[in-house]
Length: 195
Image 1 (cartoon, one colour):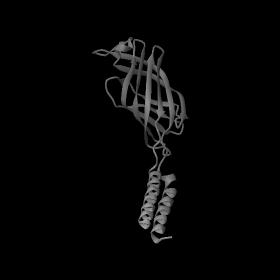
Image 2 (image 1 turned 135 degrees about the vertical axis):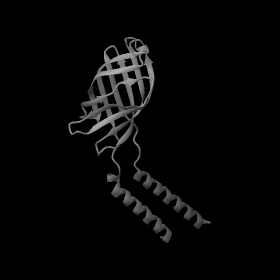
Image 3 (image 1 turned 30 degrees about the horizontal axis):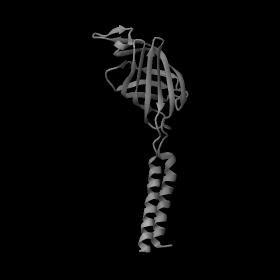
């Protein structure tokens, strides 16, 4: 084996060893799962704001009560609603829209960063958008992106948050990049020798 090839293999081995040792401690896992809320609300609209019963006129949603109906994945056990803020349909971000807590005292909160009205009739209102989930649990990523849907109708309201796609860890990308670099260098050296 040539001296250059040994150096490349040694470098790749050292990078892989470094990533293997640090990977479990370098990055927490992304927040995943979903949570569903149910509760009651009042819709307001007009100037000055007055309660409206036709949801086409609604510009503000006053959340009167909220409770966790379902939670799976990282949301399992988060069943205490600490805060659920009202929503205006004309501006964002809403920070935080809600905060939940588990029995150990860990909290998760959700900040709305964008939304769109996807349905607004006299009896139904549906909002969808994106936001940022924040967790106080040290085993989870401090923040993760997510999607949300809010539906209001004559029977009350419901709100769900679902997880976003996973993002590769930095060590994984470093290891993959090192492997590609090693292959490229090996191929170039082989091509030079053939010439």
